[in-house]
Amino acid sequence: MKIFAAALAFAMLASTSAFAKDVTYEMQVDGITCPFCVATSTKALKKIDGVKSVSTDLETGIITVCADESVNFTDEQLKKMFLDKGFTYRSMTRSEGCAAA
Ligand SMILES: [Cu+2]
Image 1 (cartoon, rainbow, N blue to C red):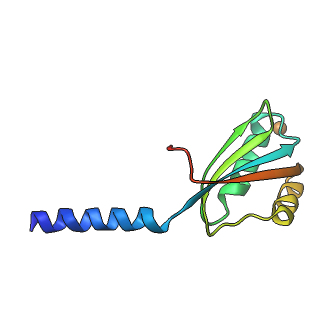
Image 2: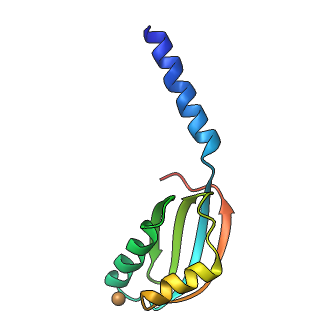
């Protein structure tokens, strides 16, 4: 029974990692100048289903987002979302996988 439970747990773990492909987005955003801006933009991004982590570099204005592949950000969507918060979205890069948290 113990062995079965362990095997089941392993199978579940293996299938989660096989299905949930993560994507890293690096977004260049203007106007993020203080910790309050960071909090506002982080909150807006985390509200989106599938977003797992958000980290912001105040020096460069680059927001790094880890999300599962179902999220599929578009330039239009991000432009509007950041504009609503008072920031100017410039561009993003997309790469497969997220750095281990
Ligand atoms: Cu600010």
